[in-house]
Image 1 (cartoon, rainbow, N blue to C red):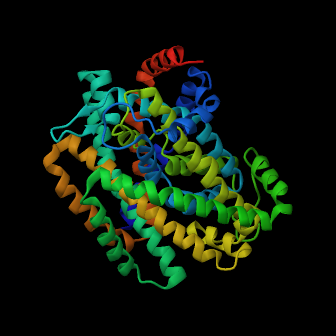
Image 2 (image 1 turned 30 degrees about the vertical axis):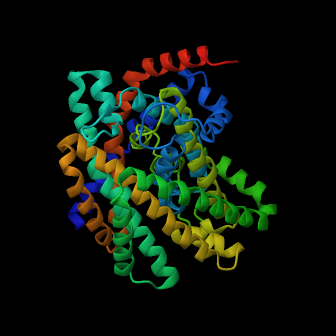
Length: 445
């Protein structure tokens, strides 16, 4: 195992190096500027479309449930344990770089969904399928086919990390430390619950996500606001720390080991992408199934996922950790977030554990659909049932494995999955710009 961890660490350092960070932030900035900052300017329009009762075009799920399915996959351990990990290694300044990743990531997520709907297909079962592998295939042509295969391959493997074992491991760790529930029991319960939902495919997944995600997001956000209200006088200083140490090193203090600016950037961007998945190419797989006839309309809804995930949910976690001073405690991961909440709210650790458990459960559901579609692209519809069985069986295994190894594996696979998608988005950006221009030229003023 030590040899594997050392090899993964080496690969992780390579794929999450400067080129990847430049690629994610650079492409997001390019798309944001190319769109004339439209994703930021039209944020209100996106929310208006989200709650519109009008459904135009063919698809399997409503535009709202498409976003909830995507959010189910993104709002998970990254928002609770991932943010804490970023601050543990990179200091408070890491939160600033998570925000920057989100602001440019809104344009990336918008572009992904536009391409997904524009180039989606109908499979032999009559379902709409899309995502990077399809917009590479149908948008870039045969000479780029290998890139679509690469994405589907990385996505099908990455799903078992970021969307399955990482989630199972984090929820087992949280429930074990808070409620003394054995890890193997948590794994078995997850296996049964997830199996019951997967029987119904994307429709059941989207229905569960459409109810659980809004409920738990609002509940967690409200609890976070209580933490901030209790520590309201420390809030200005907390923002000062975040902004100052986004650009200057921070010395060791208490249980915090200190961090260079590079560490703040590296972990802020990496955990930001891990959480909101902008650039990974996962969310457009869900948005391709939406009932819509407008790629731009769905793109406006899709970009809300990055805003809600990072600007709202991750910010609550990060600010709670900084404002309570718990970031110097030496705790890491979900335990650090639980400590921050418990310092302000009696039983706050229980709130965090329950939120993490439900967020992780919905993430497992959302990512099961992503992995399934990647496998279907590679092997056909006959591979769907075997994939679902493998997905369910992986849960108890993930719940009982080393947290360090699983986080490292997921982090590495994230980057490898992003590479084909970022290349495709760069090459297809003229299509996104043209469709956006045409849509707003025709829209009533």
